[in-house]
Image 1 (cartoon, rainbow, N blue to C red):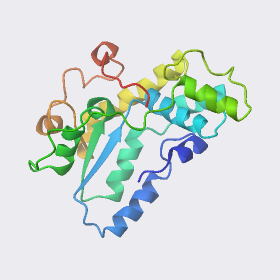
Image 2: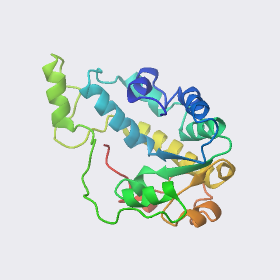
Image 3: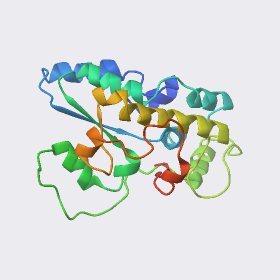
Length: 225
C-alpha cells in the first residue's frame, strides 16, 4: 500500500509516493477506515534488506554515493506516519516496530483487530520472505555476468553500509521513535511490548531522551530480511 521496494531504490527515498497512494485507498473506502497499522523497522536493516532484494532482482551493487544518499536522506518513518495520518484523518494510526513483532504475528494481529478479538494460539513459526544472503547474491550477480568483488565473503546477511552510515541511519530511527513518544503521540500510537494502553500514555524509561541506546537494544534488532 505504501509503495514498492523498487521505487524506494530508484528514488533513494523511503516510500516517496506514500501520501498519494494512501489517499487513493482512503477515497476507495469512502472514509470508513477506523484503524491503520504501519510496521516500521530500524533503517539500517530496512535498507540493507531492500538493497539485497534489489540486487538479487537485477539492480547493480550500490555505489558509495548511493549509500550516502540513503544514510543521509531527509525522509524517515516520521514522514510516512504523517502521510498515513493525513490520508486517514479519522482513523487510529498504530505503529508497530518490526523488532518487537517480527516473531510475534499473533500479538500483532491482536492489536490490529482490537477489542479483545480472538487470535490463533497455535501456528507454525516459519520465516518467510527473508532477504537473500551473501551466497545467493554472489550467485545472482555472477549469473548476469557482473563482478562479485563488491560483495564480502561469507554466507551471512549482507550489510552494505559502513559504520558512519549505520550510525546515521540508527540515529534517524531513534529520532523517529523519540518523536512517536513525544509530539507524535498526537498523530499515532506506538505499540511496544508494554501494551496498547501503556504505549499510548507512558513511554518506557529513557524514551524522553534523543540519541542511541545500543545497550537497551542489544539482542532485539532483527536481522535483515
